[in-house]
Length: 233
Image 1 (cartoon, rainbow, N blue to C red):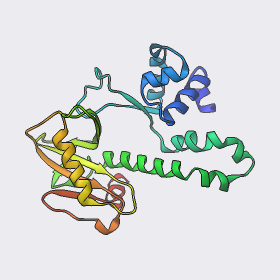
Image 2: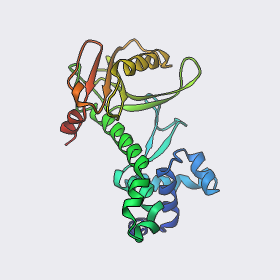
Image 3: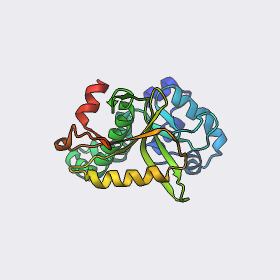
Image 4: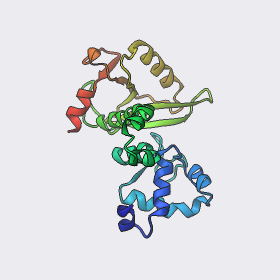
C-alpha cells in the first residue's frame, strides 16, 4: 500500500484493480462491472499500473496491440500475484499465526499459480531456445474462435526470426505428461487455427517430466524446466 501511495495519487483504486486482476477479472468489462464503474474511467489508472510495471496488457498472437479489442490484463510480478491470491484473502488468519492451516487450504492456488508462471516462462523462453535449429521471436498465447466456430486457446505461437516458420506449443505442469495425447491435441488445434499459413509448422511441448527431457524427432520437440531456466538466467 505504501508503494501504491508513493507511485499514485491514492492507493484504494489501484489496490482494488490489482486484487481483481489477480483473482481472475482480466478483461476491462469484467473489471468495470466488479467495480461498478464505466470502463472509460479505468483506462488511465490501468495505463498507470502498466507504466509502473505492476500489470501488463496481453493480446492474442497476430493481433495489432493498438487496435485489437481482445485484450486481457495480468499482474506482471509473480510475488505480487501470490500476495493478492493467497496472503491478502487470509490476512486475518496469518495474523493469528495459523500458517499451516492457510498453507493447507491454499494448495490449489499454489498449483494453479505455479502452472501459470511456468506457462509464462515457456513463452519467454522461445526467443532464447534453438528449437529445430531455428531462432524464434518471443511466444504469445492465442485465444478466439477456431475454424469450427468454437472457442479455443493455444498456449504458445511464435514466429521464426526469418518469418519462414511458425512454432506451436503446448505447456504442461504435471507429474507425467502423455506426450502422444498432447501432440494429438496440438495437431487438432493447428488444423482449427483460423489464420492459416503457408509457413512450415514446428511443434513443441514444454513439460515437467525430466524422464522425457531431450526427446526430439522430426515431428515435435520436448522442452524441460532445465532448458528454460538455463536460458532465462
